[in-house]
Image (cartoon, rainbow, N blue to C red; front, side, top):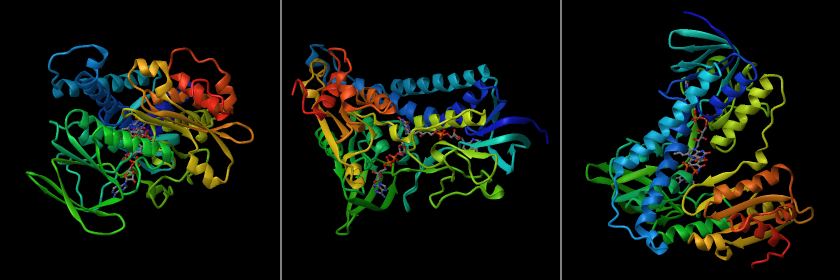
Length: 464
Ligand code: FAD
Ligand code: NAD
């Protein structure tokens, strides 16, 4: 047994953990990060955000080449799919990002302790046969997919998102269980590449946390693209054979069962906090009924010197949320004030069109009994969107009826994820719809739709 002492030892090298480690090192702390994967970057860089976006981007190009370029007057020959090259693009994108984090660790003199970390005592973490001492320990062990009882993920025919990122060929029939973010993003990838996609969703709507009006529009648009949906439906069984998977589904409220067949089934019904083999019970760190590590607003667990951030604690399971928590915690540990504003966490579904939101939905405002005004504007009335042949969707801004302060913004349309950020910044500054409406917006840009929606809050959109 050998020993080393750190100011901070982070367990998990995902966006929460690696960002926390870098910020702490910038502030002069002696830092190590334990990561058991072969590369740093966690779920996000290795099997999440980055590979999924590489495939979304690539499959969008394929779709465009097949169905849209001709409308711009660009003639192509017969378009065909080279899945191997597409996957190689995804893999090299992942590798470049993962190596980038390794470089940042070296640059900031952070020790990467390779292997599985286990908390063996307060201020003590074992990795392999070594025990490291640290003044502070941060649990940033992230999340993993949730299993559906009775349906075993084999990552071949029944896959989680990880398997869905590396299917060796395009399935004829893909059934997606769960109409949330993963299901719709990866369902879109394989549909664009030629699969027939059916989404089975337990609730009566897609992306349940989104604004109801946008969720409805999203369903309509995805149906038009050919995606099939079985809403208010539950999967009650699965038979896996070489020839394919047979799922038994029933109406959620009860009723006659039916069977649907698939070559591949994607199970995407949410993710669970990952704390397996971490030794939490040994040191007495409390977890919730759902397995999330319990923390206070300063990310402290109930055990002194042990903190937690990212997917493993409460809140949206998003990379940028984990990152901001990592920064705030590192700053606190270095004696500064670190803070995360949970009112402005953006949430984006990177399908076509994209769905992007920040702040409260209309349903949430109603439930809270807050008086609000709505401003909406369609992409179809925007010159740049017309030039892009991307006129589907709208921007919806919700502002306080009395103060005009922006309470939420919801966008479905081209580049919605990029467009959302001017509202995120405005909200961070406590901005009003009037502030957005009076700010310059370059012409011709898609951002003008955001400006017009802000003007529409006060019923004075110019181009409506
Ligand atoms: P993670 O990224 O899960 O990292 C935790 C790390 O800890 C892992 O690398 C794991 O190997 C390591 N670890 C666990 N236990 C131990 C241990 N005992 N010892 C050593 N190492 C350990 N979010 C977005 O914001 N945008 C997106 O576009 C997006 N797309 C996604 C697509 C998919 C398919 C998936 C699955 C997720 C996506 N997410 C996205 C969510 C995002 O990946 C997570 O919110 C984010 O990675 C959480 O960061 P984290 O640091 O908390 O945990
Ligand atoms: P999710 O929570 O987004 O969606 C899960 C869906 O499955 C929900 O609509 C839910 O109603 C449904 N569901 C649950 N149980 C079901 C059942 N038994 N049968 C049918 N439907 C069922 O979860 P996800 O899509 O698995 O994604 C997990 C997490 O990863 C999310 O929290 C998300 O934040 C994160 N993620 C984010 C991005 C992004 O930011 N673009 C992309 C991928 C994943």
